[in-house]
Image 1: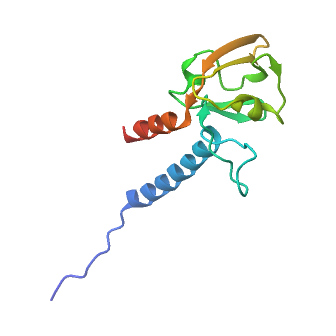
Image 2 (image 1 turned 90 degrees about the vertical axis):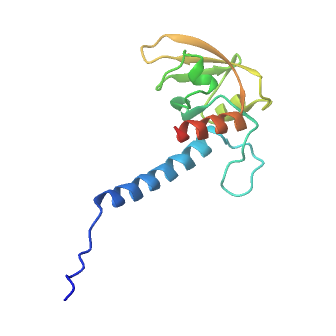
Image 3 (image 1 turned 60 degrees about the vertical axis):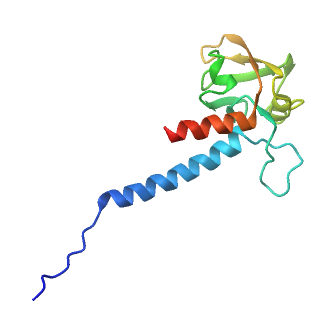
Length: 145
């Protein structure tokens, strides 16, 4: 007589599936927020990918996050919660901020942001736009390790 087969539950399997789902959601958000912004040229609701980026995630005019290794992060002048007041000496609103940041959409272009810090002071941060493909490659390399 053979012993009854016991099905062994692997609790880590459910956790792994959940983690994979979260990684997929985060990956989609990074692609949408860091690597693509509405440029008016895309079909449907999905933004088109820009040629250059500074690696900012925005909520209105507030900085919601920065891509590690991107120009905004590397300038070491910006923090989550900073409010962007000007881009290249022009005042911005939530409606025109993406357009002003994209600008000519050329990697290597200098971008100057004036932000209001959470303590009320203003600060100027200057950075060089990076090719979106380079940031995407850095993100993939980071995920590998």
